[in-house]
Amino acid sequence: MCGIAGIVTFNDDRSVDHRRLVELMCNTIRHRGPDDEAYFTDKSLSLGMTRLAILDLRKGLYPISNEKDTLCLFYNGEIYNHHELTDELSGLGHTFRTKTDAEAIVHAYEEWGESCFVRFNGMWAFALYDKEKTKLILARDHFGIKPLYFLKTNDLFLFSSEIRALLCLGLIKAEPNERIVYTYLTGGFVDLEEETFFRGIRRLMPGSCLAISNDEFRIHEFWRMPSISRTISPDGMDTAASELRDVFVDSVRRRLVSDVPVGSCLSGGLDSSAIACVISRLKEEDKESIGGKLQAFFAAYPDDSIDESNYATLVVSETESVMHSVFPTSADFWKDFPELVSTQEEPFGGTNIYSQWRVMQLARTNGVTVLLDGQGGDELLAGYHEYVGFYILSLIKRHRIILALSETIRSLDILIKLLPDVLIQRSSMRKITTTLNEAFAVKFSGSGAGRFRGAPDLSSLLWNDTEKFILPGLLRYEDKSSMHFSIETRLPFLDPRLAEYVASIPLNFKIRDGWTKSIFREAMRDILPNEIRLRRGKVAFATPKHRWLMELSGEMQSLFSSELKSSRFVKKQGILELLRTATERGVSRWEMEFLWRCLNLELWMRQFIPSAS
Image (cartoon, rainbow, N blue to C red; front, side):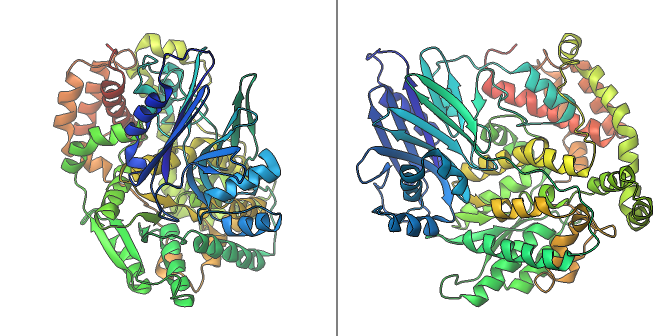
């Protein structure tokens, strides 16, 4: 895994040393690639990268070029089907000089042009320069697992894997994007669209390509998540589960290829446990290629209701893995919070990503460079409990009343827990709105920023959450936290083949008889222990945020009592009153999460918006 950066100028000013500027940009993202670096300059363009070596560990391999040296690639990612691509392209006459997956990109573009991107199975953000056409092409993988940000002015175009590299040159003034801040404060949404929290800085969207030259600036989408099937089918579940199992196992197998140690994140939940158990099965089948015990990394919270140590221990026992555990506390969080804010570059949803952050740190401490993780499973396979209610509503809209009644009865334990949350959501949102600065709230209240991610049915909600509302933010958290510790994470659920297949299967294969992820549970029969496979509860990488709020209330009160840089967005007294209420008699989940967002926003502005007042 790597970090990439570059500059394109639109004038003939030769007084600026663009190569030196790119070097400065790369220095700010050195954590993404501590093993090597490379640069290229041609006319009005300079490119650079820092490399985290995963395949073909030799230094000096970049930039990757074709035989004629007319193409130049700087690359962040992994192409998991590069062996097949290499074989096909070799048969078409292309010559390969390295063992990297990156070289498949160069020759694929040479053979098929921009239509090659959809052929790649992997995660990537790359810059490909066509010297003959003096054209720069930027592309980002299907789901946007790897980030790519850019900034365009009248004179310059800059891009990088991280926002800090765009800010370090001082070419623009860091200003908050107020509309994005509003969406964040009122709904907790992040990474919804092309715009970022920084005014003027944009992200290349998932599955998209950007082409830039003297007379062209074009962005187009080469892939998008397919529509989710709305069908209800009485049969075919067994066949579908078998097919899903085959694709998932192959997806995990592909993501184990590495020249450096590979481990796995473990939460005790269905997704991460499935990955660990499949890895164990693959090791038994091919001990020569996938040797050694699996290194599993886990965040534990002893004596807390969210702790999943018993499930994680069960998986470790079943797979004969080596478990490494970390035990985060509220004091740890408060100490690390400024660094976590800096790492993420933009505000995030709450405290939960701290567990993931500490797991990445633990893996680095233990010498593991690649981790497999379970992001995407819940959004694709309908894993969140709230999806059950939407499924029942979808059945009612289709006049499947008897089936809806049956699902309601079988899901009572889930629905009973969800109902209070639904009932208090709107009243909580009204309280949150009154805590905002009046002028700010009035300015954006009619903007359609959206506090709720409502959808007409479950199919639409699954698509929205995968494309927009949930998964993009989770992927940003994953990338920034892992790369901060020079860790590459690989996500088997986000194999395009798996996503396209899951999108095509009937809704009642995903939720059935009150079970979320029903088809995946069936697919993992005889792979997962039943204690995991048939779990009703769901925690994932969580933190005890209610308890931490109480334990850190004094520190938070002190911070919110000081001069707030975020005062243009929120009212100090309103936040202090909400915090007092939370500590004295408790508040709703929505209000508590709002308090964490206010804290996050304030620290973000102190770090990234120096001119804020």
